[in-house]
Amino acid sequence: MKLLLIGFLLVNALLLATCKENKYAVKLTSCTKDKDGNQYCEKKDEYEEGDDEPTFYSDDEEGEEEENKEIDPSKWEGKKPLFQWDPVKVGHEQQVELTPLEIRTLKTVAMKPKAFVIDDFLTHEECDHVIKKAQESGLHESQLHIDPETRKSKEYTNGHANSAVGVFRQWDRNGDGEITVEEVKRMAEKNVKLYLNETDIAEMFSILKMNELEDGVITREEFANMNTAGVGQYMTLLREENPRFRDRFSDQIWLRQGETSDYTMQEIRDKVWRLTRLPRYIIDGGEALQVLRYQPYGHYHAHFDGQDKAAHPDKKMCCHMDLDASPETCRICRFITIVYYLNDVEEGGETAFPVADKEDYDHETFRKREKDDMYNLSKFCHNSTLVVKPKKGRAVMWYNHHMDKHGWLGDMDYWSLHGGCDIIKGTKWMANNWLTAPSADLAHLDSLYLHYDAPGAH
Image 1 (cartoon, rainbow, N blue to C red):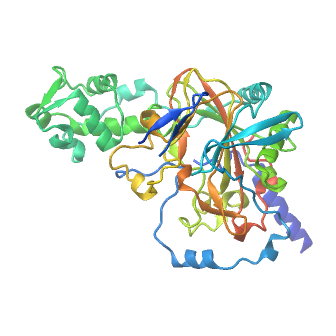
Image 2 (image 1 turned 180 degrees about the vertical axis):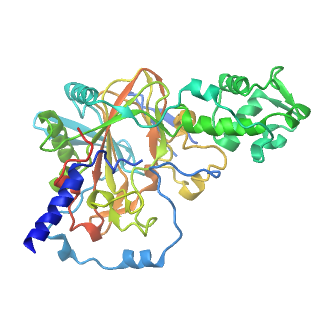
Image 3 (image 1 turned 30 degrees about the vertical axis):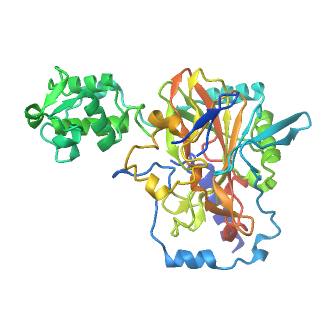
């Protein structure tokens, strides 16, 4: 029996050690700016939400029973529960000792979600170290980028579209019987959630070998014979393949921070421990550091970093605790996100929270995108109610979840919707520290990262 048990443990350890990639890497009001340039505000059609956004389910009786069931505290075996900073009010400042020589200011920038900015959280030397380590390890593209020449040589459908793209009134917004370039833009926005400029439109008509817009307008007669099927196909592919229009476009790498990493990486994790005041086992059980490089047009449209237990009654386990985890069987349990800016960006690259402190926000209404696609931060970055500029060494920390009555991971905070705005000029280097945590029913279990290096991390 002992031999069988030892064999089982060895097989499981081998499975983890040989994993090639990080399976937990998931896929408007009055505004003012402070002296640092940060912006503050008082305040799918038929498309699927992004990979980081939860799927919404109808109420589930079994899920409700599970939620209301009393938890036996003895299961937690003396584990210390979570801690969450009190934001007090927007603009409130409190001091945090990161090291005996580094005392930093934790400044509240939002109440919903609870969000804070910490300038000079990382030293410039630490920023440079992380960038160098990422470059030496070799970054890879977060999303597939199809070469423009490949798109030009593609054979497109020819004919009349059966969708809204084939309906004249969907293009002729003012009903005057003619379609202008501006109305082509608006049709793409309304029906495909695609935000085109005049150059994009000219290129589309050229690639599709269409001349209806040569004189600046498309008449009803011209539209009747226009290749609207090709237009619809082209626009859909453009949204899926072109880095400017995809939900995410960046390069990334995962770096270890535990005992097998270097001194600087471990020191950054120690700073996180002192900043968050979370139990050490939570800090050491967090995900590897995700380092990202965004170049011109690089962005990440609005998304969530966690998944709500109530919205996923069929996913009983947190992914960071489950050896057999997959996106279909587990949920993402990221209690805190800390973003580090590793360099100064010439222009763009802000972190935006579209609905921070927005009192009339209703996620079910917001996600329908009935008017504009406010998830699209390439277009609507500065319509967001909180926009934080990148600055070398600055950290932005927020809570993706509330705490439950026992002090463990509670409901998701839907005001934590966030993303990265377009890089206009230059390059942005940044990193994500995700601190995972258990719900009360799982608090007796350890994170896999306490015992194993994150698969695929360098």
